[in-house]
Amino acid sequence: MQSVPIIAIDGPSGSGKGVITQMLATELGFHILDSGALYRLIGLAARKRGVDFDDETALATLARELDVQFIPTGDQQNPLRILLEGEDVSAEIRTDAAGVDASRVAPLGRVRAAIGELQRSFAVAPGLVADGRDMGTVVFTDAVVKIYLTASAQARAERRYNQLKDKDIGVSLHALFKSIQDRDERDMNREIAPLKPAEDAFVIDSTAMGIDEVFQTVRAIVQKALGEEKE
Ligand code: DC
Image (cartoon, rainbow, N blue to C red; front, top):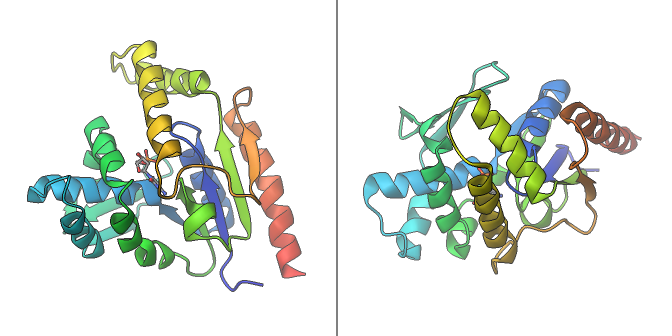
């Protein structure tokens, strides 16, 4: 039995894993690791310092020395304030440009290795819900539960479209679909830590499910596994 229970939630962009991670962590009182935010922070730090995106050595050094703080806010919509070198970058790392920069640094093996220890340091009592692409396959291979949450690219594009429409941000469904397909292509076909379900993951396809149904499904899996762990 492991001392700190870890729940790994992996999946492609727009699969809803961020929301499910938050709902689960709130219910269990566990910590959250948003590993995508780390790649976004490395991209942002590189931009701010003028580091060349082709210079893997410099990016790995920057990743190793990343001065970042995650401060819980208690607000479920925006659960964390994220500080980079003391500056609040919570909104800045969520922009599309930051996502593109993140996807440029994420395939680099030395960058990924540089934040291995930082990611594992989030595993403290009473437990951790870790959200990403390689949580169950690379970073937390000993996770007590591994979930792979997916949905068709069309469904994910439509969800994103509806979110943006509600915020009055004009964007076409087709452009979102294309961007999701491109991101899948990059995340799934890279050499190092490609996005795929761990062999022992529960795969949930949420294409035809609402968020509550997904949460109930995940919750049942997690409660069973945590119950078995205690026995
Ligand atoms: O989940 P997100 O959109 O915040 O992720 C940003 C980028 O980081 C995305 O291109 C994939 C990459 N990423 C990764 O390679 N490994 C992770 N564990 C999390 C994210």
